[in-house]
Image 1 (cartoon, rainbow, N blue to C red):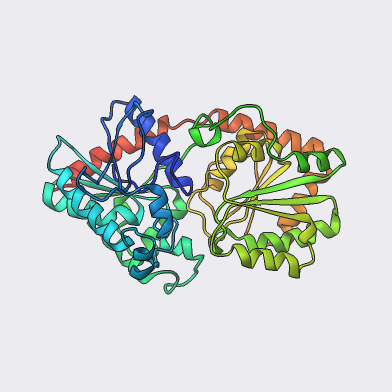
Image 2 (tube, rainbow, N blue to C red; image 1 turned 180 degrees about the horizontal axis):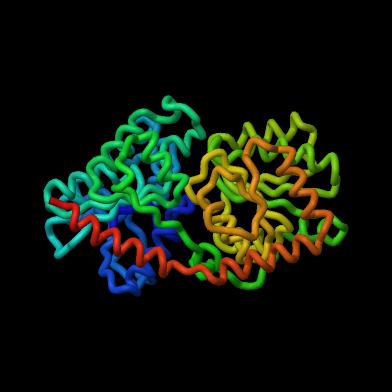
Length: 410
């Protein structure tokens, strides 16, 4: 298993999906060695081996080092070599090349039967490992560059990443897409044979570490809770502040909703290259007093935000799956998601709107704020839905994909 992040060191949903999927694959009998590009203490994980690609004699890389050079799963990976040297850290290109070379060496040392690579950062390593070992390669697509760029044309995003994704999926024996939405992009934008692509929807496991880290009794949002006692309602979004996430549209919806219901507060948890733009947009719309930006949060702060929120909104422009609505539903928080998301394919107890229809999104927010009976019923139904979800089905479909890949490998 080739991955670029794993809780507690992660930047988004891919890390949590990898964690839960591997746990359930192990329960189903899979023997996994998970290879990361950085070194960290994963001794608490007892269901698989977790190893860095750096041997004792090599320069040690930590997850914080990856953050410094913007080389996390959701970084822009455009930091210059000079900047990397100033930070006394290996440039992204060297980290990536080293990961690829070391993975290739590892692939021929163990008694492996399949290589499973997650997203573009590990695809080159997966291709090389397949070439030197002859093992079948499964490429798992959690997001494409089209999604990350929020683009509706062939020019969107980084052409280098497009090329890596295309080569990775072309060389793979099987491709796993996290939704039909993503499969459609893979087939129509990358011209990959649809028979090669298996859809394996993500699921939810509310016991994953990022929702329960430091889970002692605490009150991270006491100020907002005080306002809630005065009749205010809190609308939550958790995610990266990038064009993909549709947050400019959410602010437009907030403007409409606040005009109708002044006691609405919007809490944005996350960071990204659009962060300052969103702050400025809130100011230009005249709604800054109703908007709260916290920056990146994890662990107990995320847990408390989910449990405190009155409504959760994910208005993504292009979301391959989207696990945060499932997490919100686990806390009985009613959710609104865009139709342009994979998660909308598997949930019923949610409002679904097009990301661009800010009036409809605003109307749903106001409705949930004004009618507690509706919000409570929707929250309970959502909790019942996610309580029935497990990663067992994901693990079963993934194992079957491994078998199909082995049969396709010649």
